[in-house]
Image 1 (tube, rainbow, N blue to C red):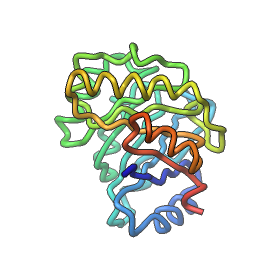
Image 2 (image 1 turned 135 degrees about the horizontal axis):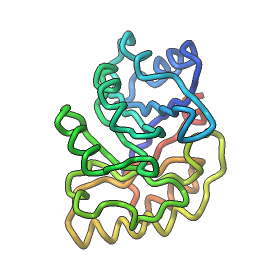
Image 3 (image 1 turned 90 degrees about the horizontal axis):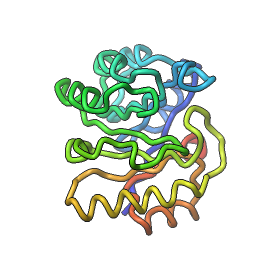
Image 4 (image 1 turned 60 degrees about the horizontal axis):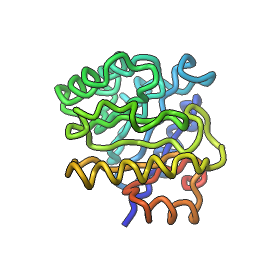
Length: 198
């Protein structure tokens, strides 16, 4: 059964609090963090979550320059898992290692034009999740891009071949139809934004 994870992408603290409240009753929620450098968009900072009381596990998706520099902020905000985009990441190994040292679950994310071969294969065993963007990372409300499909298949092949335990998560523009399609080829989790919370 594919897990559907609600995601919150906002620069409005009031809206963040409202959406977290709406997600209550689920297991977890993904908080999208964009720094204005990775993409021409900016969201709330993790610090905002420090004062929020919630039963939800908080997963932070870091669409930022050097995600490793954001780990401490995420820990203080009560993170359960951090997923970093690799495109502006100097060392995937260091990011993953530092996150694990902090007691976090950890994943790496591929933007729509980033190939699976850009992942450091030696650390796949250490990952809890590989997140495949099915839209351009950094903005909500986009249409699902089928370029994600071959990457999901490739990751499923790698996982099967090497017996690596990571989950495959797909994020961006998903509909009931595309959820079925990505699940069929290997996705374990999908992320949905406003569509599911509203």
